[in-house]
Length: 393
Image (tube, rainbow, N blue to C red; front, top):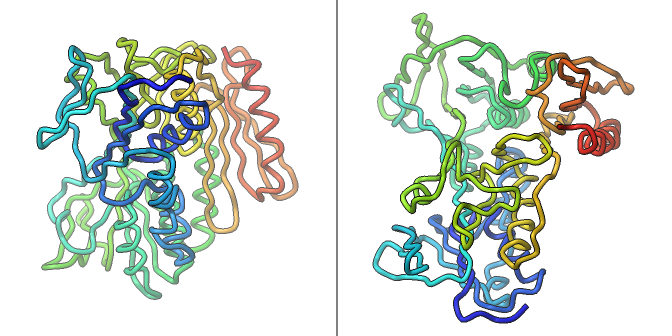
């Protein structure tokens, strides 16, 4: 690949952005690469934050994707604690806050997503935290002392992983969810019920259809008050209320946005020089014949590689079967495809593990979920991924 005077600029130094920079070198780009991120720490792997870091098995620093020296060694200009003010498509430049500009040959938007804030009274008390960064993970881990009382607001995957880690650390744990089921956007109700049963069996108090009215305390949080008036005493609150894609920069530049930055199957926006990947990317899936935006580790990895190849002119469509995993206690949850597109789910067993196959009204497999030992479920889920690639339409 020939060197171009202008570098490839990647906005977003998260998982997908950093992997895209590495993929550009892997696939032959010898020109400049600028990787711009708002956080001060090195790009890091997020999944261990809610597992290994909370359990004290790993530090946030050990979650870094690459050592700091790796970027210079690979000719990548890593610009941390830098915000992008705007994209000037006419002059083909990215304008940073503070006045610096970066000309680009190709531009990759890997701006990720932002957490939805907890807005009830008392949300600013000490001991009330989301889990998004290594700093959050360390603060939560320090608070998970044996005997501590934790309330988790939000029954998504991250909330349940936090609950599992806290229980293993000797905490008393309550999980509150407004919706009628946990992980409602990710798995069918029958799968959610199986995971929640594992938590309840171990002593977690999981409640659905509840509204948080306020968080009470003086300096630090002391209780969570529900809309019913009940007060749940606590020492720490962790909330996970979903995320929203960071598409404002793209929208301000006149790019199409709808549930993220809209792209074609090649992860290209409606500007031929600009691509998107990761949590922020809402791409046209040829596999599912619809626009899809995914928020998981596997998607961040896969799209980073595809976007890098397409910025180099390889014209590779992105059509990976969606897949994600979660480790809680001594069991794994793996999900392939889009079970939410199914209308019926049947259950199969493999030893003490369970498979959940979601099919649509025509009997076409749309997604497969599995709970149990990784030894039992990894092989079948891999087979179902292959089947989904062949049958999804």
